[in-house]
Length: 342
Ligand code: AMP
Ligand code: MG
Image (cartoon, rainbow, N blue to C red):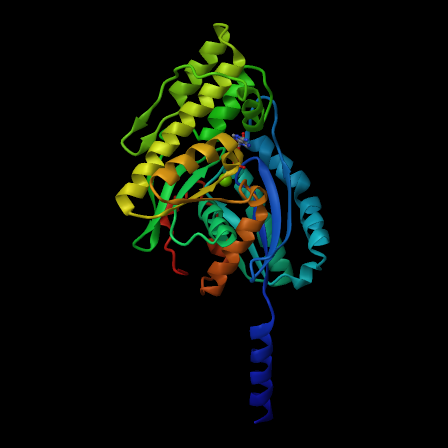
């Protein structure tokens, strides 16, 4: 009898205690560790990024992540002012991404989970971008414009899965911008640099390529580099490269709103930092009487907090994973994941 009372007390106590999740992000250039609690508070979000001048090499990125894993974890624990033993669950990016980079995150997560005897959950990186965005902006059922280095997708929830309505057929919009900046000698990462230079530029025509609901950026990249080589003003090319690629994204997002009848756009991914893109999507949304919600900058790019949050909501919804199921999945698609928690 006493035992049952004790158990009830413990259960009650567990219910009011908040859970803490530590998330590891390592899909591409960033090794990030975030710590969040189940109220959605970001207690820490530390990272170390690898942006070599000649572009990202998967094996070198993996070496970078391996070298920085321990210091980034310690930095996150320090900023959260917690001990590693306070963490209740270890989450990590299981895919999609560069295989060698993903493996560093997975091995780190397994080591922590096994050592601490805590549950582990591998989550989908793209969905983590969406869910931290929904949590932070209070968007309910948005069309998601996910624009990052490696990914460019227009997504919406339908029938229990995040469906990809449109996406890039070749390179991600951020990679296109970064490659352009590198090829014309502006440095890396290119996004913030070309945004600054392009402010003084004027529009010149560049290839605009929307195919149905999909996008293609490689022709635009080649043409923009050619323009600079032929002596066109760098500020005009920077302005027009952004304007053209963002107009393509706006067109697909607008059509997704129109097809689905949804009334919100959630802008996320590292390219969401672009003021020009925010402005253009804002105008489109206003015309359609939809609202634009941009994910705050600190959690818009690749980061560990979004992985921690995704792990936490999936764990709370009952998802569990055995260590044998934590092999990375570099080609894991957004629309393969059953969204059981909504
Ligand atoms: P992510 O892969 O989500 O971490 O995003 C990284 C990408 O965001 C890189 O390709 C950056 O060049 C890009 N980026 C960052 N700031 C800006 C900006 N202001 N305008 C355009 N792209 C940006
Ligand atoms: Mg990303």
